[in-house]
Image 1 (tube, rainbow, N blue to C red):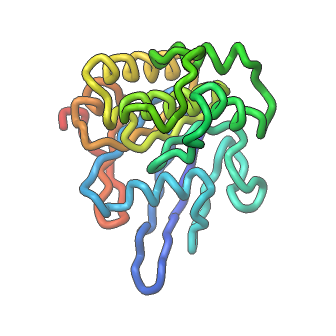
Image 2 (tube, rainbow, N blue to C red; image 1 turned 90 degrees about the vertical axis):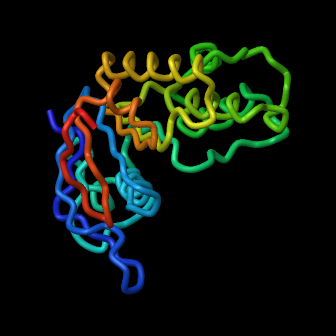
Length: 215
């Protein structure tokens, strides 16, 4: 079953084409890896799929609904793109509780389980400002997975993590795939792509091409 379809998607900003006639179809329950140099268009592609960037032309279809026509944003989405906007003076749990209140779909217990799952303590009273970079990244993963979304879009999900954190996040992503989620990851860590992804894509100058598993 197709979860995400892009049909001839292009995006121009001024005279520069940052996405160039992209057509791909992503099935439910797979992990898709996207790699390319900085400025290749990976983040812009992810922003477009999340509804944060409207294409100049083409269509993006999420679970058979046309983005910016039938829906403004994907209905069930967990995302990390660039730096999450957490509040420095809230604890990790308080930050996630505020975000969870937007849809009001999950309980405090669900939030605490997500925090525990990424290796943090839901009862920790430290504010976000006191978190290390690795702890901040773990909390970002927790907010992405806490509502058990159909689609996960993760830009550099293992960034700033130590080896234990990297292994934990890989385990979580494999569990989310087994749950049936469609997962998109962009990473500079080719080992992530080799270990995790079912299908890899190379992003270059706003174009997307299929790439072999052995990177």
